Image 1 (cartoon, rainbow, N blue to C red):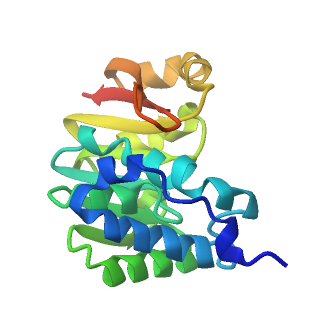
Image 2 (cartoon, rainbow, N blue to C red):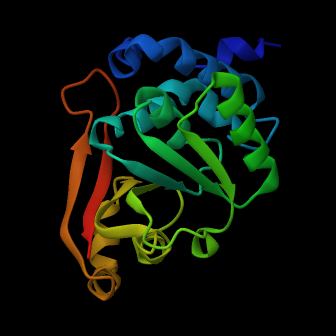
Image 3 (tube, rainbow, N blue to C red):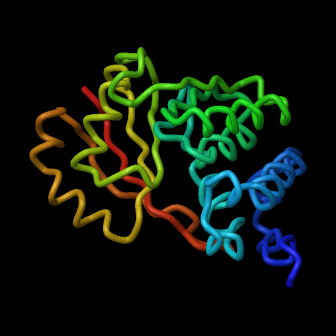
Length: 211
């Protein structure tokens, strides 16, 4: 049997560019997620060969856009919240997750990595006690925009921003969510490509200002 650690994707050179002098923290998080993530039900076995590129680096691409206080809805394994907290120690992140075992994992990673800018809250997004509280709200792999926007926009202060990491179908999702976008009075709606020109798989972020 091939040892588990050999099945985890090697760290790509772009990680140093994204994490800078905090790269060792990113390495520690990626190693723990690679070693224990499948066992804990945080990631599937098919994710191990692309753990860095598809998940850790992919999440960190959002880091330059962050400001102030940020909520990560449905944080799960800590994606994108933990990589963002590592890359941006100047930004306060609240990781919102309803499942107890995932909350335990997030708290463990926060404490083990010494991420003093992270708070972990066990709550469903629609019940999180932070109405209109954050400068920005992000989410990754949580659901289609038509359902995700109501869960996240309620947490954003007036004039704040949604930063929702999405896949290749984001434009189609946005079209299907036009009524929801109008209902929540979102403006400056656009999709930005992140990672262009970098030696990694890019990602897409749905961005919108909340009135």
